[in-house]
Image 1 (cartoon, rainbow, N blue to C red):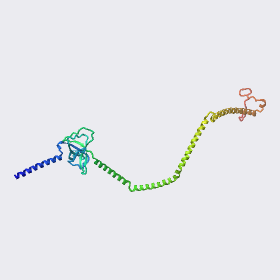
Image 2 (image 1 turned 180 degrees about the vertical axis):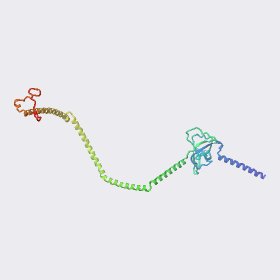
Image 3 (image 1 turned 90 degrees about the horizontal axis):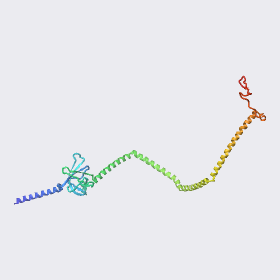
Length: 307
């Protein structure tokens, strides 16, 4: 009887142990029989993510990570197989990111949907639908930090090139020249100071000159108006100019008459010089020409001179 009691107790222990193991297995598996399979494809590292990690949809636990492996055709890609509750209707806009739990730092998969498309994402256990994996906020910060460090390193290298011995000597020379230029400008400023102090008085004088100029312009306008009036200086000057033109015309006619009379006097004096007796007896008739009565041909001397 005692042996039977021990055997019964051992059998019950084995049964309870098997049931506990099955329950634990079902808890770890998360009831995979009622879950759909999906495949996450990531180009980014998934540090801290392990199998059986929690899968959350907008912060709510909806599944587990089944396995993580590299794509045999492209080792750059990471394939993450997940199981999600079947009653959760994922759309084609769903995407995955890597999240971290509080102080523990354990990673989990975070599913999100931008809601742009309501068409449901269909999947199959043998050929699970693929969900794109986007970098998390920490990944973006880390990537930005790496770029920032790279830029900082490049800047340091450029500064090292810029601050070599030769350039330092040039900078020192430039600083000395700048110091000399500053001193020259300071001296020039001192020289300009008296002129700057006299600017207010000069401005006052210029203002006074402008006022007098305005008054002069007003006076000139009044004079111009008076000159242009009928019977004014301009009108009198025009009348005088007309009279002067008539006088000049008469003077020209008198000059022409004097010229004609002078020519007649010249001819009379020449005739008187050639024939003085014409003053008493009148002008002698002209000598007959060739073919006229009384024409005498001139005689030619042996030397060829006519007489």
